Image 1 (cartoon, rainbow, N blue to C red):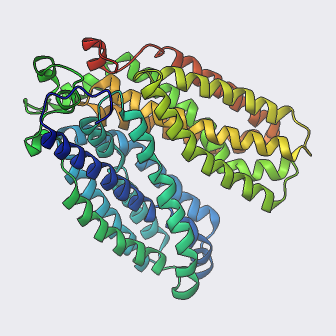
Image 2: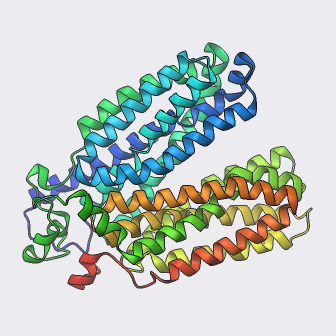
Image 3: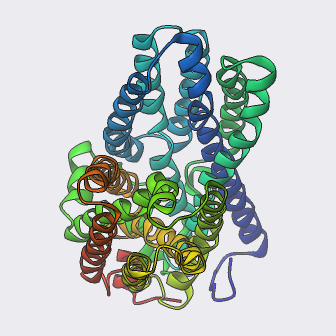
Length: 440
């Protein structure tokens, strides 16, 4: 429960509560990793699909673009739905349906079928993030959720690493169709597992709410945050999330954070090859370092926001984005043959970038309260995918028209704009902390 906990409940109650929230954390980590097994597999299969079915890269690009649009919209829609219905059911059903769409993809041979199935897959994929946001806010208090959210966020890298490691072996020995069949079957099994493991709230197990059990608020104070009371309507949920100016601040910040993040994730190897004189091997190692640093940076940022800033996400996020702006400027100004400088910059940018990305989701849930956490988190995620689209099309245009220098300058501007929006949330924290004055 944490050394600062002031629980008024028995040791046995505390132990049961600790067991169930640990079970929730590892279950959503497994579940969200499983979503990536049946999401990143397509990229491994693309070359073989193009060769076998005589499809062009433009054909595949259409499939990917349609899916990205659906996913961005879906995160907001299922965020609203997730706040009204069981997170356990939404996540398990989303993973199950996504797995089925993957298996159907394995039987497909037409571009139109690919486009429809992959769009439906990403619609189901968008059912993964909002339930996790909801579950985390119900099982962890605002003064500890940042660290746990960051730990859960490593599911991205875990799932991607597993499928990127295993899929080439499957492709080589069984063919591209099994790159969809095998992960799809595994995901079906994991959807059953997380359905069995997850429970929506402590109250559903006859346990006290997280505010009560951690001593964050008195029993009388915490009654207003309990989930036993009548659920909000759709309109009330949307109003609670989207009529909050702080949710808009972090949502707009997320758009610019994703411009920075996706510029390096999608275009990083090309940028290093063409503007910094890196070899393909060197660029690959730098991107591996970028990903590994991101995992540790996110956990560090979550811990700092919990322990040092007592539930305030703004200060850490502002610092990270300003530091990223400085590092990108250094990368831009460094000579093209300064491989050590570019490597250090990429490593540091990777370490810093996941902090704001994670903490924006946490902050949105904090500001909206746990009753509308999924809606707020889904909304900020949708704006993040707007940033992803801008980074994809905008970066390509700038690089072709004005060169990589213009790309790096625009990334500096995006980092500064993100920092400005996040600065507006500097003192913002969860409502329960504001009302109780308890930040331990």
